[in-house]
Length: 481
Image 1 (cartoon, rainbow, N blue to C red):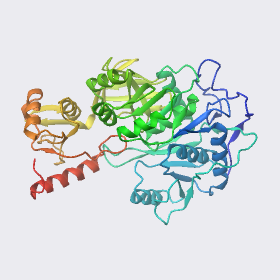
Image 2 (cartoon, rainbow, N blue to C red; image 1 turned 120 degrees about the vertical axis):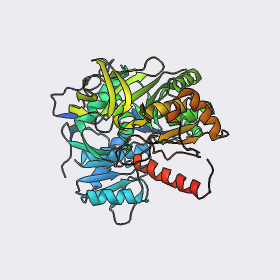
Image 3 (cartoon, helix red, strand yellow; image 1 turned 135 degrees about the vertical axis):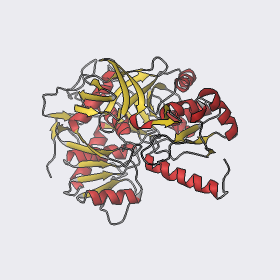
Image 4 (cartoon, rainbow, N blue to C red; image 1 turned 30 degrees about the vertical axis):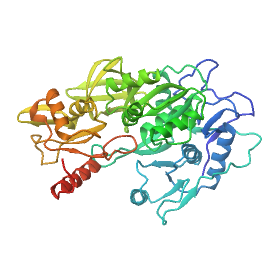
């Protein structure tokens, strides 16, 4: 099992070429390899956990030690829950020229299916909650004895680094392979997109899983390539995030989703030391972004992207409805189909969303191409209906749902709404003020929660099963509308 080359790094020498004295520089695309990370000193912090810090030296020692113990297999299924353990496992696989498989779901059945699909695979995890018939290699809790001198690994640009999977929001999860070059250049594009000019001390806190493409880009690759540190946890509830930030005392970038943001705003969660909020797109409403900016006095930006291509563009939500493509990317439109190419995306990629390309620096996002609905001869989009529903005071979460009835778009809509203390009839009255009556949901179900995944999306299969369950319970008289 061949290992990657190294950049020599002494105890205090600043040697990695990706970081200049005052600015971060895009990697040279003509080189054969990129360093694993852009940190310049072995004493720099890579991760933080409850007041404890982990340095570059500790991280590289752990990654190299783990790499030396890995089996001679092609795929490593990274199921680590702790973000620092994930980072160690991800680096160890890279060093060992193994491909990390990053499933969105860690359920045993999903892991078994993944092992059946990739027989030459083993699991890297920091827990034992995996099927017993799959080889498990634990990421150790303890730190190995530090080497007096350690080097930063150089990873070949064309090395296959990871296979990520779609969320299934538009069907069954699909696999997409990522080279090390694509991941590094994607991170560097975000560095330029958000104007990160210096290798300064910033901490990334993520409410999203690093196994998801959005989480991988924002909470793993961006910190690695910016010379930043990560918070090791995966805070979910408002109190969890408050506790995470309380022990950092450094400028924090929060990588999150509209669902988490809505909960934090509703709870008026204390979020100390925030410098910027980056949110996934579902979309995030301007009113919610405004409330967040007013509450914490920080800018809120959205990233639009996809598993296939990574980050495509961003916007500051309160400032504009238009999006700016990431550096190096070109968008073009062919009828109602949009394509993106260049930069970290490479060859032309067809986007699944309806987009209007206004210029080489701006585009408008309308929503998925498959969310158009027609009722009584009138057309609208599920994304637009969901955005209207979210703007009703008292609605915490909700979605319109279109049952699958053959290929026809002409069908009645259902809605599932989380709105404690509100009645279905009150929500219907508010909707009637805002949308054409033909699109009013019949029925509208009040539910305790929607079956969202870790990034806040509603995978089609999961939502379909949820709809069937709620409908059956309603018909049997177990719940009322």
